Length: 329
Image 1 (spheres, one colour):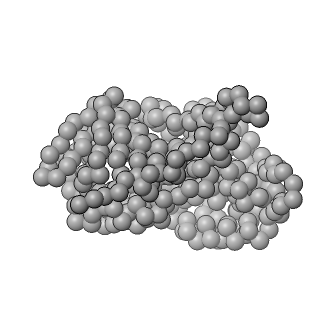
Image 2 (cartoon, helix red, strand yellow):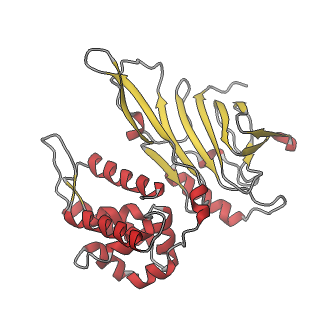
Image 3 (tube, one colour):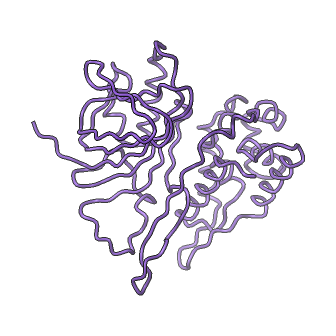
């Protein structure tokens, strides 16, 4: 079985290749996508691989050597090498009686494509197959108690006005953070102004980026919060700064709303409807006032200063609908 985190990585790789109108998706595309895969990136870092250097080399190679289709309907095709890597990873996992194929398993399988630039770039960084096999995360039964990745059913209308499902898949944008393992944003949908509801609208999340909606706009976001730390645990200022830096890169504009001297505290010009889908959450306002939210509890956040804290040693999943507002004094 293919792990959910790998499903997301493969989906994202295909989406990215199609958006760039690449005729083929290659082993190099696959390795580039694994740089943002949780188990793949963790393994590469354990092997002392320079992920940002690999990203630059792979991006430049793909842009220079991948044919682009501009004048016909595009159906990006995986190369034989791409297919062999996935088949090899699946067979290796099945033969070792493991539970599922992860990004780290695919990383090992890439080394079977000895003549590929993907392997050449890894070797340039001093990363070998033996290094990857030694440093890949060990699978445990606990790994299978994690959340399933949420799917989104998107409806619309066909040419005669009949309601149809346009898609039922994982979100187009899934944002994970290397500096804060376990935190994930699932960007589900967004609107600008008054929606026209023609039923023929393109998926806005294929192109949209940003943190909070403008006045009158909306954003539907699921957030998975990492397991909570023991009460009294001090926040490492350097780790917090690293998280804000990565947040700024991956969700442009969002870090600007967070306070540097009060980790987690933030304010936005939005009205937020939130609901705890799984787990528990502590909502803290000014002067340390808190409320303990449990599964099914809701909150209406009226543009006030606040922060979230997970009180349990397990992840928490919350859903938010953010409505852009205009702050008045």
